[in-house]
Image: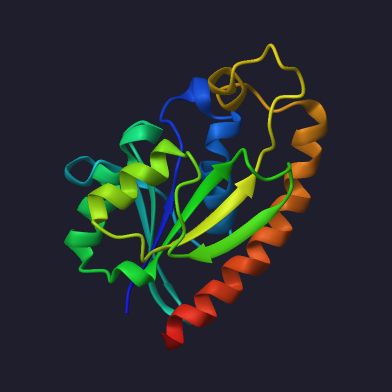
Length: 183
């Protein structure tokens, strides 16, 4: 059965290295593991899409062309187009409720205040999908708004730490692929 890996982030160059786009950064890293896999724009599916064949079966990777808060529109469209079961969907998202560098993989999870996750749950009509939450932490200073923080660029220290985070997240991704294959 086809698996859908949906990264959450904002389109546009100005958002590339922001904390809210850690899902996009991670999906780019994952795709490097597949030869000749490239994202191509799919207007009707509101996404950039890369399709690959893996030992676990076909995989569709997406980066929605919507903003984070409207991610559900793209995820739902791709799910329907490829006839993907909800429990074969993995959403890659930032998580301010986890310290920077922590990674958590869960199914049937709540949104934890993440508007992109909320949009996906509403669009799918279910939370039976998987979430890989990539910890970005919270602002160190109280005078920094959360929205400014998630839309802010990574610090130099965080940029260094991203590599370790992606190693751990890649291991969890491999486990998810194996588990989904037998689901």
